[in-house]
Amino acid sequence: MKAGTPGAVPIQGGTDVMVEINFDVHRPAALLDLNQVPELFTWERIDGSYRVGAGVPYVQIIAELGHELPGLAQAARTVGSPQIRNRGTVGGNLGAASPAGDSHPPLLAGDAIIEVASAAGTRMIPAHEFYLGVKKSALRPDELIRAFWMKPADGPQYFSKVGTRNAMVIAVCSFAVALHPSERRVGTGIGSAAPTPRRALEAEAFLAESLDWEARMDPEVLRRFGELVAAAASPIDDVRGTADYRRHALAVMARRTLTWAWNDYRKVRAA
Amino acid sequence: MRVNFTVNGRAEAVDDVWEGESLLYVLRERVGLPGSKNACEQGECGSCTVYLDGTPVCSCLVAAGQVEGRTVRTVEGLATEDGLDPVQEAFVECGAVQCGFCTPGLIVQAHDLIDRVPDPSDAEIREALAGNLCRCTGYEKILDAVRLAASRKAVSS
Ligand SMILES: Cc1cc2nc3c(=O)[nH]c(=O)nc-3n(C[C@H](O)[C@H](O)[C@H](O)COP(=O)(O)OP(=O)(O)OC[C@H]3O[C@@H](n4cnc5c(N)ncnc54)[C@H](O)[C@@H]3O)c2cc1C
Ligand code: FES
Ligand code: FES
Image (cartoon, rainbow over all chains, first blue to last red; front, side, top):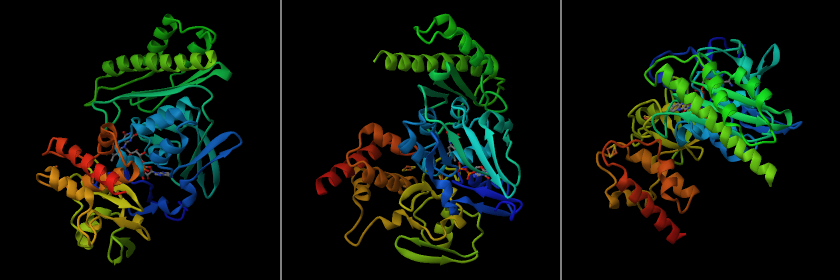
């Protein structure tokens, strides 16, 4: 479909595309309206994973997948306003590939896989290989994002975002954590604090080694985790915040979200 | 291009539309429905809120081509032959309108809230209206109006 109209800009919810058009950032030669592709608006469970169409709006993820994909649903709740959540989609967030996009950290922490398609066929791209640079992704010009795949949470997941007020804010920085108890592993995702969303790989490796899954959280492990998450970022100074502030905030969010997740995990085990 | 859609119960066929112009522009400039307001064109203020297939959206962020075959309801489509919608009445009675620029969007958004949540808490009202900016009223009277409309709806249904 994309191949037939080169230069056409895909439009799903339009919450990024229309802002650019309204402000004459660019006038695309043609729009490719994905609202006409019903398949993109559906999600299904296949072989123990969720396959969520690129056009499923945030409001539907919150209402229908809040239990299965809690980290992503939490992030979705912080996007824009009700009107934006009624239209905006994870597919569009991925298409825009802004480092500040709120769905990216939970997709990274939850090991999401992005399904992209062109006339040449389908590719499955792990989220951590999808983001290549500021607003650059692994998506080729002739490809469209069809869906993302994610396993239902196998442990507690949390998302946290620093912004200047509660609604309608682009993240100053954000962080997502997902416990994977069966693998004795913790997934992470950092937003708005590097040219791309990224995992905190050293912090993940540190926890895989140091976390005692039978015990209370060791404050020293928690402190070091925060430090490593902050070190994984390469933030910049901009109007929304300084690099130092972002590093500091990331360490705080990392400790906080891991504590929440750990407390939930221990509670479930005790019960 | 030509765009065919239904607005406030009436079928419209609008010609010479550029597919990237906004639904807001089509409504105001081509269909003669200036109720939805244009204040930011970037989804920030909510004054352009309309129902698209029953869901409130910022009409400034919907491309004209995307409404082909779909149903739009604007603030002009809320009143009936019997008079104003209860949400509109409540806004008037509570003095929730000053310059009025934000009002149409707030009314559509509040209308949707009360439809979905018959007896909304203050937190739910604030959350529902988080994408609608008002420079004049300080929001207190708007909250009063939504509470009043909700309580009347609860009594009447
Ligand atoms: C007022 C306001 C507040 C916002 N707040 C937030 C926020 O808090 N957090 C946040 O993350 N974002 C926010 N955004 C940005 C935007 O809402 C999100 O990025 C949203 O996820 C975009 O989804 P969409 O479907 O509207 O994308 P669209 O605007 O339709 O598309 C976005 C980009 O993706 C491309 N695209 C869309 N679908 C596909 C596809 N299937 N395949 C390939 N390319 C595709 C488009 O060509 C375009 O480049 C906000 C926007 C506004 C206007
Ligand atoms: S004009 Fe559409 S949100 Fe402001
Ligand atoms: S009454 Fe003037 S902006 Fe709300």
